[in-house]
Length: 468
Image (cartoon, rainbow, N blue to C red; front, side, top):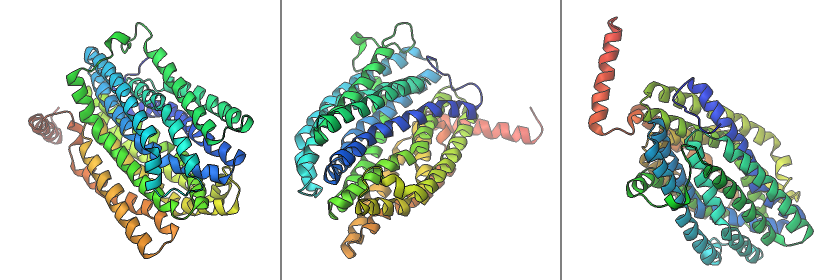
């Protein structure tokens, strides 16, 4: 399967068929991300686990903007694909790759240069600071693989091919586990070995995607000599991508601040909370796969002017994601003690991880709802408002709450409650925005929207009077 035209057939079938490979892919992505923590936590110890955990939020902050921008690029490519405008689609693809190369260089330089300063500003425990810096720097030497894989997979998913990125990620995940066991377990290379294993695996997944994309004869064939910036396509990518990138960065920034608060409780809390954060990634899988499917489906269908299909797809994706997320939240609540112990069985470490899990897991449905509504608007080319909501609620309000709460009472559970509280606030705002906005006409000008609204109202009035 080279491409999938999601403008034809049942919206429900199209979204599910597209989402399943992404779900499986994300499962392996989480195995990939968790392997370092599980192997380091069991072979090296809780301080090494704390070092890996303290780096995670900073890594997400550095990479999230560019991976979010890649999602925006996917919206533009999906739109051209839905319109059957393959010339502009190919130009957008080559511009996306050029953007990814430049972004990789920037992230590598920033990550390697500023890791000691940022980890110290986060209040990282002195006992784990040297290993945290080591892990951070080695990881960012391989950031090219992370960003380019996200660019390549966004391109493939934009044209409906969600399976190829899955195959390559499965390979990379297995390779990462093997290299982790080799470098950490056999060669005793510690957290540095874990980071090197991850960097190699990420590079291999990106390389395999690239080799597939240069295959001759496809409508999205990548040619090395055509990889350059096209001004109008770059503007389009930035228009749709920057809000998504900022939205991801806002989440990353808030997580860094939360991590700083957790660091103030010592290395045991860092290890326990870091273990839960890895598990949380598995629980968020239905959210991730359906948000990506929703964005691609809506973008293709709005590009093809299939407005009714876009509405049906949005409703189905939101409802399904919310229900699956809550089911996983219930399982997380019940199984938390056993799952956290997989990373490190120290009772104190486990107690911190379980406390976080049981505070937030029954509220996953709120997180799913917020992310899915944001995906709807991103697919419709209206990503600015979701970005603003995330910035206000998930960053500003969350940080203000944590600062005040911890100042009044230095109890870690107050940090955990920041998540369900802000998820709830954003969900209420998103509900009203979704209900009363004309997102389905996202790619149209104001004049075109008004004309279409009049046409729809006229057709509806005729139908009510019995006309065809």
